[in-house]
Length: 270
Image (cartoon, rainbow, N blue to C red; front, side, top):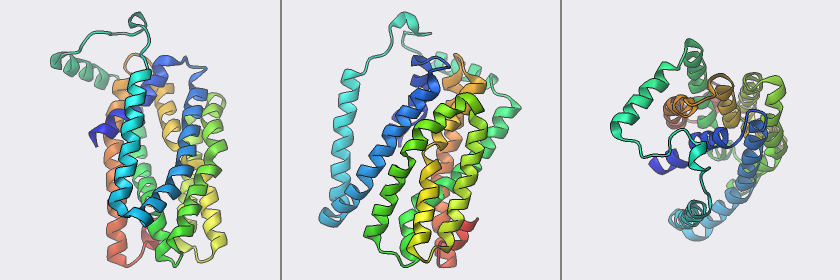
């Protein structure tokens, strides 16, 4: 948990804001998200293969070894900008950290809190449905192996959108694209809840894949459009607390609903 919080999503978005100006930022987000989509296409079927061959413990060891190798490589080769390009190159004390955090809180507005509340609700639904994708399709009679391949295809389907949705936000605004993408995910979940034939699975996979990769970068760009500046990291970090909770609550609620109602249909429809 702490390792993920220190590396995934928000810390990377802060680096993007630090290293790229406003005009180049959407394209940088798009390239980063594109590479993430490639990894989904590779590691979803690969992990399923490892589970089948070595069990879930062996699969965890293999993925952990890859994370360890990549983490050390990135830490060794990736360098921060020069100290004079940063607002503070010294070590921050606990008291200074509390002060800076408080200053970041003072930058929030009613608009920020409304946007954060909407984001939490969307992430609860999104994380719940995406976490249980394979199990939900299995519960409807589809075999796990071809389902894992179909889910991997979502990575391929998402590649163009991962690159172009963040880039397009420089023209249309990230907020509008985020709203449209979230609505599309809702339609995809409804399709999944009634899927009985493989063509319906592919409709679900296609619709989900086209937009899901843009949700997190579009959220960060929407925050950046409104709160970019020296306090961007503090503001998006605050929102990340609620997003992290939503990402945990979503799968738990969907799982609880599936156990209570003997199926995933109701949870996916909600």
